[in-house]
Image 1: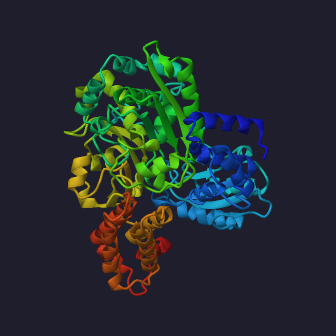
Image 2 (image 1 turned 135 degrees about the vertical axis):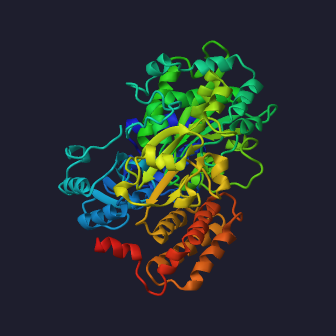
Image 3 (image 1 turned 180 degrees about the vertical axis):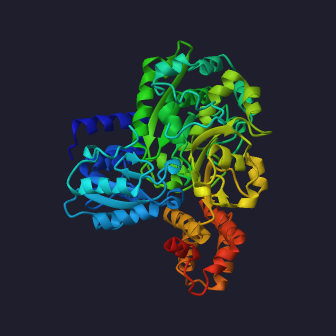
Length: 174
Length: 433
């Protein structure tokens, strides 16, 4: 299986982090970064990671099944909208935002639009409790999200825009 | 920073947060950066550990175990390599402080890790960062690169014969991996199931080698202890609770945010003076004082000092510093249900009392909130919870059971108001308004 030179360089860095006889430690970092490039955790990817870290495909498969950010099958959309409804977000409208996203996108929990551009997930606490309600699109955080801001974001995404092109709403970090 | 500061804050760990380019090594070095580490190089292992012990620093991840004592459990004579592992898998609902400590001052964390390495004789460290915090992995990687370039990491550091290597490690979404033994399993590339203890990580941690495992905030407190002395740090807080704490105020307050306050700061003052009081002038109903695993406090129990011992005496926990404030319009059944949905989702399935208990409790609470509860369910919820306590490898089972017991015992009238097909009285109120 071939990856981009950037990902190969990252893999090499990962494998060098751990003691020589402990390459298996690189399993989860390799899987999550590879998923970003490949789109999902495919059987081929599992076999490739297993080969590189010295595990069996079964050992990697059981890891994949455990972690909620690793998606098998077709994976999530290019832009994965994650709305937190856990306690701090719930108290200030997180559940209503999730409901709004479901209706606007015509999607349910962990569903993907037919064109594969946008997907939706109701997520557990993402560590933004003091700036709730919070939304993450892929790895970018949006804090203190209002229904109007969410509507603008989702309208833009449905029109095929990237989140960074939706000028009215700014992500907060990086 | 994502919120305005409060004049009541005592900025120790956060003192560089508002400096321009606070995450860069130049900024850090210009404000006492790595001076504590240089001081520690000249100290013996016992001297460092005794200083941390005398500071009264207790684990900021939630359990509040004395940090110096934890470090002293690492065997000196072991022939195995020793490891320092940082728990940056911040995922306790209500908690959002470690994010800031990494984003705005990553070198403070590196310095704390280096000092821990000296204290126990470790030469390798890893920072386990939750997968959702991808941008923090980038911040941390850049800081690590800077520290290598300036000779604060690597071999023969500062020409003083000290070797220490450090790397980040990404998680992939699992609350359970914030528990120390599950984190170690995950770090080794496995499912994040917990390990039975003893042996504790100090003796058999990463790769079955002696390991110091602490929360981000715990390591970040160490440089200021070494630099300013144990007495200074201990004096900031209340007896046996040294230092400050990053409290994460969320929910129905006017000014939610992360505030660094002395240990033992009064909870009502935190809500009214730091947090700007209740949103919309509503009445306070309840507070979860330290993240979702901590038993809820009723409004009349909230006039307490926020340190480990005082909150424990009030039959709750200081936990991870996530203070969730709920006003009079909050349905306690709904709050209990949402928290249980979380634990049922996050239970790793390793121990049956937790796997089955959380799922049954979720179903019972859901039925209750839907208005189909029966009176005997109230007793059943309590019984189920009590049967989970202490019967699992890790504290996730307890973390699910303890708040549930408190919700049912303290707000029994609200549970009764949902009985026999009655719709949730709070949802009705929302619709009417």
